[in-house]
Amino acid sequence: MGKKLTKKKQQKTVQNQENNREILMREAGLEYAQAVKMLGEGRLEINCFDGKTRMGHIRGKINKRVWISPGDILLVALRDFQDDKADIVHKYSLDEIKELKKIGQIPSDTKIDTQIKFNDNSDEDIDIFFEDI
Image 1 (cartoon, rainbow, N blue to C red):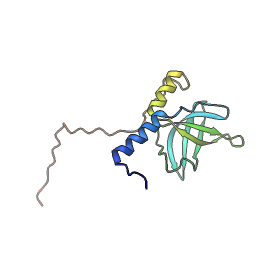
Image 2: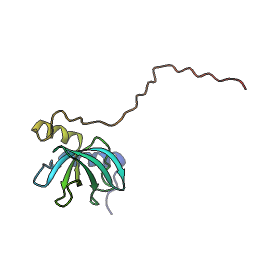
Image 3: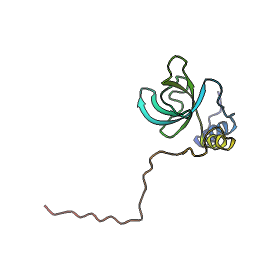
Image 4: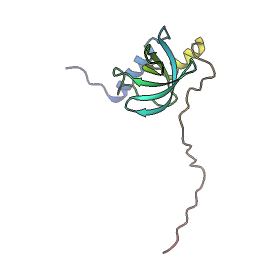
């Protein structure tokens, strides 16, 4: 039987694996893209960096292992027979995106985190009044 790891050690192991992996670069038939909107059924709307908007399909290999949300930078495989569709091959981490920007693979004006964040204004007092009925 193998050694059972605690939750913190498991998280550190996953982080170390992510830090040590090689960055996948664009090759022939591949393109960088940014997720725009989730459509359901493993599909999403993506803006490719070649200027086209396509429908992306999450491959079964990464489905339910990698969670993709709007604003994420992706590597997609273009289809020869359907120009308006692409398959999601890889999701880049924040460190990988910064490295790709530094190398010049993706435009430097690309917004990395475009997710909607809610501000927690706990410093403000909120007055709530109730009427007696």
